[in-house]
Length: 112
Image (cartoon, rainbow, N blue to C red):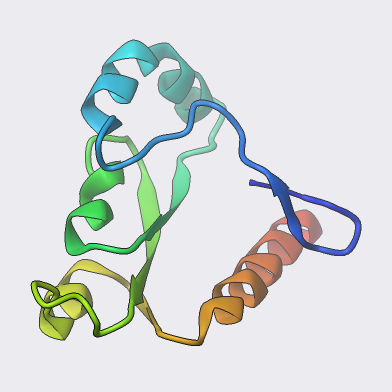
């Protein structure tokens, strides 16, 4: 993600990886991920709205921090599945929380 001067998400960087294209994206862009791994950049932030989205970075070398949006509305979605899949659960109405968390993470990395 790229943020503007006010800290608002302005755009997404490529390759964008989704739960539907994750295997294909990884296979097509293996060099991209390996290059960053070799440069010591092997941490990922995963954001999803279904439990299966949490596995998107499982094929990548390194570590991930997983944020899951749980609204409790989808009949098939069970809260315990989200809790098992994600490190942080964002409940309905708490969407701004993730932006604040990401700002803190990026600010910490800039200081390090």
